[in-house]
Length: 412
Image (cartoon, rainbow, N blue to C red; front, side, top):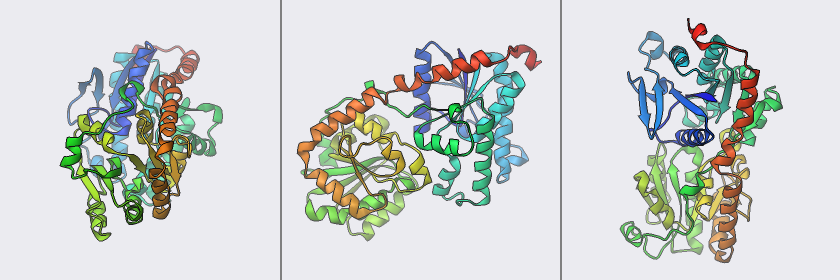
């Protein structure tokens, strides 16, 4: 089986998107498949046309410099056109059996064009609806013209793909509600590299001292500071939390678009002495910060994006046997069993967060069972080997159904 993956971006860039991709490719290769990989112009590789990273070879698409690339909306057409041309160059070289396009729909449109030209079936994998992400980032308004156009293009691609995969049940339900046959849509859930996570790491006391956190109990968050993560809800809960636990401190590890606003909010709330912002830390140091925390908090806001999409971070926490509390948005409800693998609080509600996290801190006798249940869940259901195995039936069916074709003759 030869599979050409069509991607928005990849390693060496770091994101949940690139980490999922890397895990998929590794497991597919372990199954004996040949995988090939191309990224669109949004990788921003300049004129670089090929690159090898961590043993994976990527074809790159040069950034368009034409007049369309400088115009709003039309620049997205330039991305599609550039990727379509790049696929026409790559396909005769690698001769794939399957084209596997990953979000956003720009990649799917280019892959569908190439699939039609070369007679190759197309799988489209929806990782999120990017129109919803644009609303959170402030580049689009819900149900505005750009939002509706992006949604329409997404639906167009879903209807024309030979098979659709997605990362969670929330997205699957939304896809089916658009009129896509349920039997056409398969969930390939997010998972973790279970072998990379161990249980029972001990806190680095030197690091604790450097951060001025000696003797404190710690709750916190490690990741990117996007608005939808709801970290302002965590900060607004701090005054109530420290009333019952004066030794409590909040550790926020990372950075992002909301960094300055969160620091200002901590000052406005008068809790700067209760919160430590570390800024971004080197990837190989992140584990040390996990080991400091007593409770990890994921206070995602309630919106379409978070109700439909499951995050990776809670799974990584469970893989380490961590204690976690999260808002009751749909994406978390798919992952966390309240009171069994973690604790859920009402989304967008600082008082509920403070109540549930406070109760969790007072119930340490329950922690061993929570740790064990979370670890068991990812070991048995949310590891990449189990998740990626679901592609076998999809690829096999499409390869059998594909008409006989000669890539060489189609390219002529």
